[in-house]
Length: 183
Image (cartoon, rainbow, N blue to C red; front, top):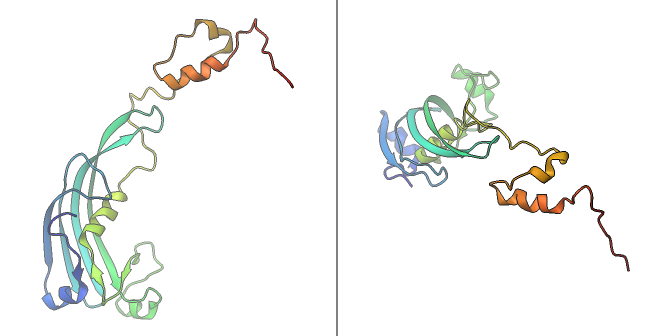
């Protein structure tokens, strides 16, 4: 857990009557990173809405989906989000606040007004949304290992990856016939 980002009761934020700010630096257990996660969060309780904004950054190590090499990627986010405090189904009350839950920019998250706001969880979710769907190390990516032409089997040198050697040993020379023993 990042020191200082302990869960806060929403009632406490409401009683505060002003903006609560956190400045943080530390590791996120759910997101292994090479550098500590650094950033700031601001939360303000506004009746039926919790307005949360913040920024965070870190560096993570990913594995390229094409060449399987590891590479570093910086993750950073700067987000402003409105979180509904109440039942998601209460669209009439949301409309009174001037909000449309069905719009693209509508409220996506909701919390129990008697529950907790978890700033560390919020940071994790925002950084997770920045993770690429496809891990690609860049324009210099060598790509997948090339397949071997069967006619060139004799001239193939053992691959750097020992798993390929085991597969190549299963191939038989074109001049040899494989024997199968039957009982």
